[in-house]
Amino acid sequence: MSASFSRLPLTAPGAQKKRATAPWLLFGHYASRSLIIIRGLEICWLVVSSFLIFALSRPISGAAHSAPWAETIAITLIYLFALFLMDLRDLDPVEDRYELVLNLCAGMGIVCLGIAVAQLTFGILVFSLPLILAQVGLTAAIILSVRTLVLARLSRRSRGCRVGFVGSESAFTALDKEQLRLSNLGVVLQPLGDSVAEVVLRVDVEPQLRDLRLIVIEDTCLKRPEICALIEKCHRADIEAISLSAFYERAFSKVALCDSILINLRVTERDAARAIGSRLRRWRDIVLALLASVIAVPFGFILAIAIKWDSPGPIFFTQERIGQNGRPFRMIKFRSMHNNIRVVRGHGWTTEEDDPRITRIGALMRPFHLDEVPQLINVLRGEMSLVGPRPFHPTHSARLATTPFFRLRLLIPPGITGWAQIRCSYAASLEDHQEVLARDLFYVKHAGLLFDLFVLIETMRVCLWKKGAR
Image (cartoon, rainbow, N blue to C red; front, top):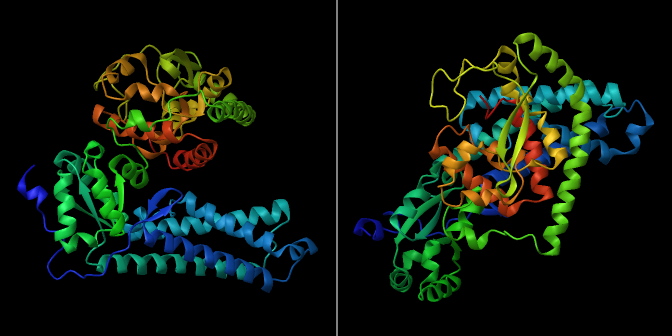
């Protein structure tokens, strides 16, 4: 450990002594106070304004007058769905003001369309048109103003929540690479060194250390005998102590690829709760796959005709993939490439951008992931699930098998969509697959019906905006 790493100053000259606020915990994960404030203000405005336009509008039907809160909740949900669809639920896209304005305009257009459909088709949300347009305009102005003011306040802050780190320099460097997410949380990392005993002594002799709100401890340091003294002193100083693996999950929604994975992952299906959960998951997959198949059959018929007309070859493309516990199966997709054509460029690890093998219809299907619709057959067969890790080709699986902890992702069935698919860009290298593996193992650990529901809803937005496909 270099001296510069273990002895960095704990506070900048002239820094305020007031303790910074730690990241809030939202649904088990860290979230910035700014994001929570923004969400809270926007929801409050939507509820209040929706109720006001209901009260001020002259109801056309008695049904609209009899359920004010139902109407208020309905229009609020339409707004929230539009904000979600336009990726306005986080602060990341707000950095670009031009993108924010465009997304807001599109989102408000979706709101108007949703209200019009509700009025004309279902006879609900019968509001005065001028009041609806006034609410849409005011909502866009308020969203823009609130986010601008909160971000301006953030940019003027000299420092954020200071988080100490106890561990090796390599672990700190890996953690420090997540600067974008850490800055969104308002977190400033402070390395304290890899000696637990030294940090225990510094808590007593350096008052500045008590300004920390959180201390992240590398998992290997938790095995040292001095760790109990450190945790005790942190408790007395009102400082939260957390392992590096737990911090990764709360802050980044992925696991740290370290030995603690083997301890933290729930890898057994023996207990009754996990067994019941697996049966419920299977029945849910069957029901949703059948419903999706009914909707997909007419579109699938049109795609089948288009594929056959566009290029010679079969309609479906089957390929061997590796499933749960390493069992191979034949995955079914709509054919999106020319039949019997070899790779003419690239390394063959993944599909290249503007790959000459892709047909014209394939170029239309792949951005929206329509070529993956026949995988519903694999779900009904029990070879795949709706949500899970992406199934790899045996060749690619063999190349990645040397990666530590790779086989842990085979503990559950592969999925048509998954946490890594919606959170990571297209994995085109072994380095990218490290990030995918971290996300997959996070899903393996936290797989559940509510988590799956969130992934399925997020997948619709990802498909709409053509993300993560080539």
